[in-house]
Image (cartoon, rainbow, N blue to C red):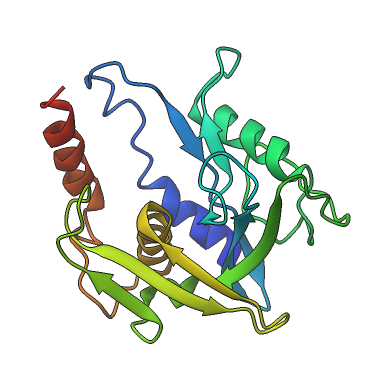
Length: 204
């Protein structure tokens, strides 16, 4: 099994399906975490939002947003939002890990974001990682990374929920425990996030 198929098989083991359907009805949103094989290694694509946007201006994010009534499911939401934000993904379509979408090798047409890729194992290394405790509005540590794109020299600050998503996917896909402390168990991350969700919704 090659890197692409192996990674898909690993991540499909953590598909939660309807396990959280018992939670109170809340506004739904989804993000797409694009993974690709580049030079034999897993990378993820991230976006730098324009400083002119109303929300998360100037921040590094994964493409995504709120669900529309026309969306069939969470995956549909993530794909639609990604298409609206960046229209086309640049790169070899054979390198992307995907099931329901075709990526075409054309120049990225940006509406309001800049796209860049990061090696997935970057999010398991302590080298450029920083953690802050006791930040208001957060549960546990606030993770941050400083990434320098080797191609452009551009520097990016990746933090908050985006950083947590990246750490989680990296730990699962690479089967590698991060060099720094994380609140979830890489062998069983779902139980931790279920507890967080139940704790938050119990206060509603």
